[in-house]
Length: 80
Image 1 (cartoon, rainbow, N blue to C red):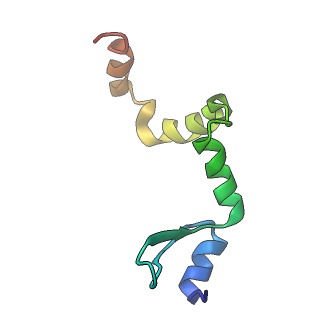
Image 2 (spheres, one colour):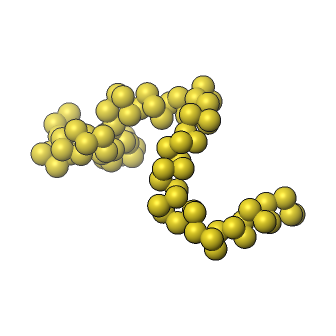
Image 3 (cartoon, rainbow, N blue to C red):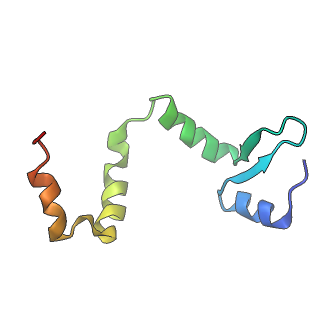
């Protein structure tokens, strides 16, 4: 398999490269092994979600989750 320069750059950045197998016409995704290994840990359930709490907080807060308007979701959390 030969990759274009753009595909090589995407792989180097840890991004996925989508392609279609010309023989089987199956849609496929090419990712680096380290990226694949991390996703497998999530998919097979061996990853403890608590490992993500700090990372989620670091991303969610600046994205607006700390906004006072979001408090309505906490107030209604246990209501059906």
